[in-house]
Image 1: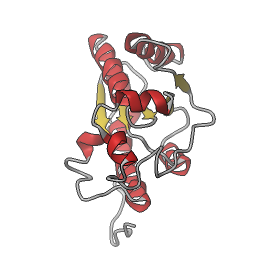
Image 2: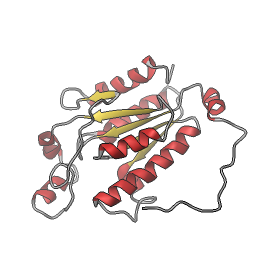
Image 3: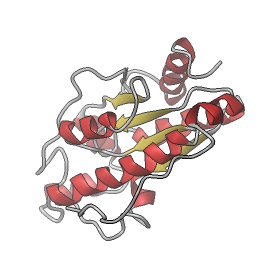
Length: 201
């Protein structure tokens, strides 16, 4: 658990989030992709990011594995470290949203309380929970990193869906089923949501 830094003062900035958003011609938000390992979070998030880029939107994608190579490289996969992992990435995502970007995060983020914490950091309507709903049987069939096989063999502890729990989102803004749609269809479902709710034109 991190301690609050003492002797610091919040400094207001001349350029506001609204100013940055108007310059970019979009409404900033955070697309929070959650789902089991192998569900397709990163694949769908990348497809959406590519579509938005082609439409000249200003975006940034924060992938769970990539962030663990740097910012969160000191964290493991215990429940405590998972909470800290999400706390850090939530703070980073908040800064990116404040810059006027459409931000995507692709993390398992298994605990509802952590996803609620991330939501509470942002203004109303800025947090968009995207549940990548893929049955664990299909995730195991895909198993792109061989993690399920190792988890079943007891070689990986605290593996979500096997030896560690996953809180299924109860009311996500976007519910994506990769077992029933192509990656392109899943991506367009998310892009269409952004258009319908005025985040992009």
